[in-house]
Length: 298
Length: 298
Image (cartoon, rainbow over all chains, first blue to last red):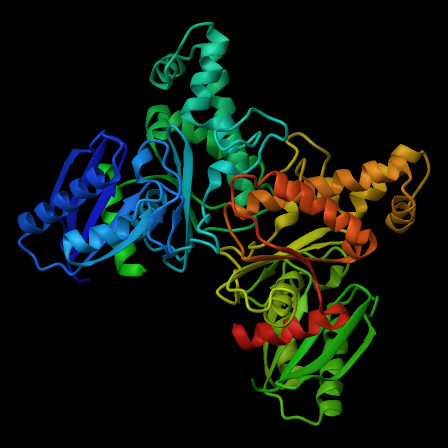
């Protein structure tokens, strides 16, 4: 592998590093500008990229950038990014190519994470894998033959928007009963705040869940069940060799949450073949590694 | 393309033909032996194959065989075939290679049909497509970059077993609420017979549906709605460029049924990108063409 610059744009931080055969060099993070201005965000990404290259001391000719999605890959433009509004329809790839002086490949951040876990993390050695991240929302990435399956319209891997409860709660996307609307961190907060009659964060809910508090167990296991059933459905269509779970809710819920997902998944696959469900391994640098890999594998 | 033998094994007929650049040569059909004996079925397939090659007058070195699935591709064995019980775990590929004297590739019949419609039918020109067949059961095939996505465990494209109604009717596969259990021909017959209080075939139901009879419209549109919602879910994960619908229920339901599927699909994709939904084009030779293509593209 050549040395490849990886850049990961999040709502609160930009992470940067240079991926080489010996691992990640010159990794660091900086805050994302909160001005809501596309130029300010792009400039901050470019500066972070130049700084990572300088720190690595390596010659770099190509950069991958993980961004919130979905993306218009042909145009190099973000189509939807509620946390970074100034980015939508901003000519991000074009500006970054000018300012970094190298070829730039954009990738959806969940796709980038899927690629990183596939090649260097929990799905290493698999041919096909599915990565699902459960945090404020639910996203994912489909890896087929070692590459991201973006799909025909750039929507590949948007597992958070499978309809799992017909007529269920309204999702941020405007449709009813999406997996995200019944099993994400925000959905858990909505249901916990209703059930307890007071505002409750996902973190506070998980404290009660780990204490074995009945309502919290019921809420968290309910979310896990929806995720497990959706994964069982996907096993029959995508049939990944390994499923990798990441994101803050999976971290917060810990092994008990993953075990509840696995139970529902296996129950809905009796008579079928189940894949191992593993938790993500790469930690906070997953986005930078994945962004660099996206540039390698595009 | 070389001349390739295509063989399509169904519960009632075996079809055979030789696929060339000029189309299908020497196509014919014969009944499937109903003895429940693997050897008898394999012998009938081999005879049909030899006859098609003879009629075509071409030199053929490889055969593709479409069979009910799922298959164990590594072993060349059918794992599940309720309509041809003697076939399960029978060394089909090995015997056919002996008796035909050529290399034989097995493929799931829905995957084969998907491949045929992708390359020569309703999805021609697409990079990725999804084929769904609605008949007695519901099956499908996922085509990515022009090839069948079999998946890691040979379950790719089994769209009939997406869980679409949690806790819903029991499916033949033993799980509850599968798409097949709420929208297949057999599910329609179950629901129609209950609603009308007398045994009713899918064909008879479609006659009443086309007459605009209220219960029949409600039953058929309900099935169409489940299919449309499932296709919308799959659009967000697989993101095919084109969706192709085939099978007896789609034929029987006609354009009104497909229009109802499309309405539910588009309603559940508002804010997302929808793919065109088209009906299958290849007719009864689809299985033979697909089987031959499976041998070409394996």
